[in-house]
Length: 165
Image 1 (cartoon, rainbow, N blue to C red):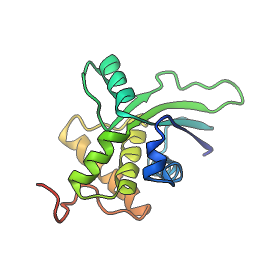
Image 2 (tube, one colour; image 1 turned 180 degrees about the vertical axis):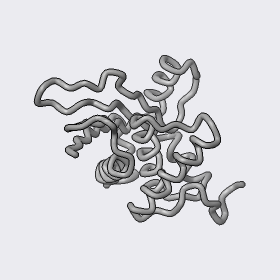
Image 3 (tube, helix red, strand yellow; image 1 turned 30 degrees about the horizontal axis):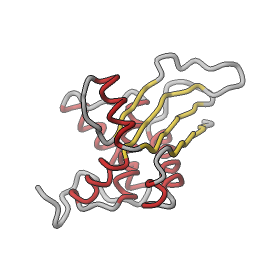
C-alpha cells in the first residue's frame, strides 16, 4: 500500500531536542500502518504535527472540552474518500513537545522511544483502534508493543528501573 506521511514541525524545540525527530515519526507511522493496515484500498496519507503544549492545549479544549495540553491527539478523517489521483487522508496526529518530554523524564524513557510510541498510538487511533474497554486496550497495547519492538524499542508498558510506579 502506498502511504504518504506528511510531517509538520511547528515547534522547533522538537528538532533541537531530537534532530532525527521527523525520521523517527515517519518510521513509526509507516510501521503502525503496516502492522494494522486500513480497510481502505489505494494510497493513504497521514498528517503528523510536532507542536508545542499551547497548540495542543487549544485543540484539546476546542475538540475535547479538556482545558489542558495532552501528549497526543488523533483526529480521524470521517470522510476518507480521495480525489482521483490523490491519497485518502486518514487524519491528523498532533503531539505536544512539553508534555511528551515531561513524561519521558518521569517514565525513565528516551525521547525517541516515547515519541515513537505516541506516534504509533495516534496512528492506530486513525486506523480505528481504541482503548475504551479492557479488551480494546489489551489489543491496542499488544499492537503498539509489536510495532515498537519491530522498530527496536522496548515494551512501552513494561516497568522501568528508576521510574515512579
